[in-house]
Image 1 (cartoon, protein in one colour):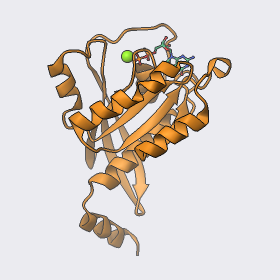
Image 2 (cartoon, helix red, strand yellow):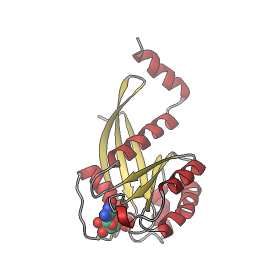
Image 3 (cartoon, rainbow, N blue to C red):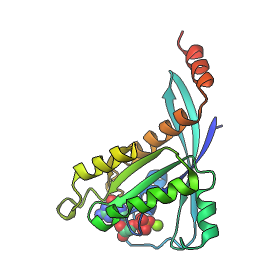
Length: 188
Ligand code: GDP
Ligand code: MG
């Protein structure tokens, strides 16, 4: 059984690869065809990591916002109770990078200051990439978050993104006393 259950959202412009990243992570699978997500799709995955020399069992509940993002109620439900978020843009489309401002503002307005990871996706399309790595790092720095370049197609860095996010959520949500308790219990 999981010790913790965390809801996370994956946000970013249409077709940046949000659904593909989730599918790669949860099912280790990639489909080349563009399948438009209609509603909000929810999947989950158990993840085990170690912190303070202790194994932490976590269940991640991953919300994928579909193609109906303009209904207010849908959006509210989407962000409600989210503990962390992955912001995705497409390395081959600079407009999706420019839109990150809107996405991070929306996240802040709906979910408050929660842990995030910034992701430049489609790193396999080397010759088409048009957002330099350094721009990704700069934006992440300004957001006070981490930056990874991923490919849902090859799987590059995909697991890492979710792992980093889960660890951040864990450290963000556990009260200080709990942290010391855990470390005292385990560091013998
Ligand atoms: P979403 O709208 O953000 O959920 O984007 P999708 O996951 O539906 O992906 C949009 C399109 O980009 C689809 O045709 C995917 O096959 C493609 N795609 C997604 N991720 C990658 C990737 O890492 N590399 C490549 N080459 N194509 C990708
Ligand atoms: Mg989608």
